[in-house]
Length: 83
Figure (tube, rainbow, N blue to C red):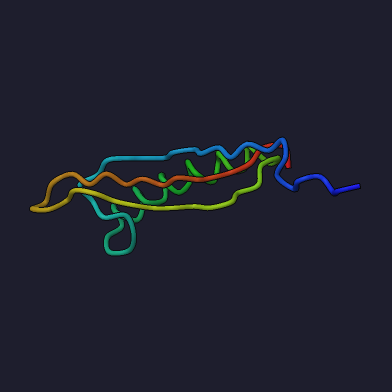
């Protein structure tokens, strides 16, 4: 008897996190670090609230910011439920 397909019944989903900022997220200034921490906490809270998921992939991107303008920060978390 053939074994069942390992992904049968699982559906890949994606959760998007985004924010707009005129500050870089990361090290450099205490304001930027606090702002980055808020964004990071949002993602970590969601992960904590969803313990029955399997994270398959995480991607990050940013756009804008040229000439001191606003930057959009985007993190996409690809996951499966019920794991």
